[in-house]
Amino acid sequence: MISLIDTHSHLDTSAFDSDRDAVLAAALKAGVHAIVLIGYDPERWRSTSDLCQRYPFLVRAVGVHPNSASIWSPSVQQLLEREVASGTVIAIGETGLDFFREHADPALQLAAFRAQLALAKTCGLPIIIHQRAAEAEVLATLAEFAPLRGVMHCFSGDTLFANQCRGFGLHLGIGGVATYPKSIAVREAVAHVPISSLLLETDAPYLAPQSRRGKRNEPAFLIETLETVAEVRDEPQESVADATTENAEQLFGPTLAAARAAGMDSALCRW
Ligand SMILES: [Zn+2]
Image (cartoon, rainbow, N blue to C red; front, side, top):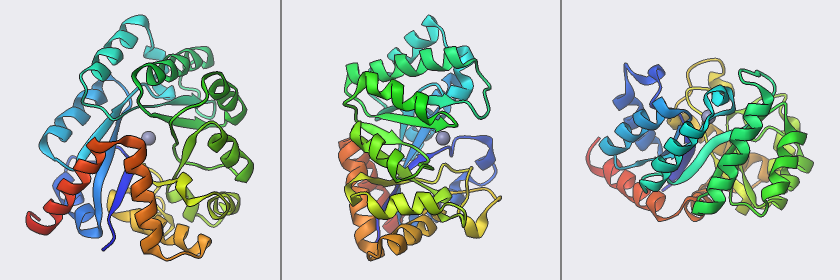
């Protein structure tokens, strides 16, 4: 039996307000037995916490997304530290740099990114990194804090960038982007790195895989990304599923492993 973990999802957003239970049931049915929710600003810290209390197969990370970095201040940093100290989160993020959208001033993005990297190191939690149009700046910042534990979420670079991320101790989060026809360099990287570096993720509701591109993404669609990864690596889907699930549990720890066990139970009994 295949048992997957969606390591990056935004199921608390309003895109799922009308049918969240059905989306979760479909995920369990598809073999996605645990899901990491990413609380990317203080409002989302609350909404992810609410969902995690209701569903035992959900866990969460908290941080301030680069697109929300305009809110970054000493008091937000303090709130984040308090949230992390509550012991209910498995990672810090997503954080990073986004010079494609530039919703927030680059200097403020960098300050928030640095503070969250420092926090992750202090409290021993993995870091979840978002980068868009900022590869060089992200690498330079990571170099200040390496060695790290964490993931380059929504990996969309080439083999060189993959190896640079791995050099800092990061995993690569592989999602729908890897299934797009033009993502040749991404698939080449996926084929070449050791399987121990790979995690699977959807980034739902964003970045649906090729067969549903442009529509709302959801955790059940993770299977399509698994198929692509298995195909480009010329490995059986089962072994890619086993390895990526084990990688996720090693990185994010026993809370995630317990969530997946609960998800497997729920898949058998409740839905
Ligand atoms: Zn995200």
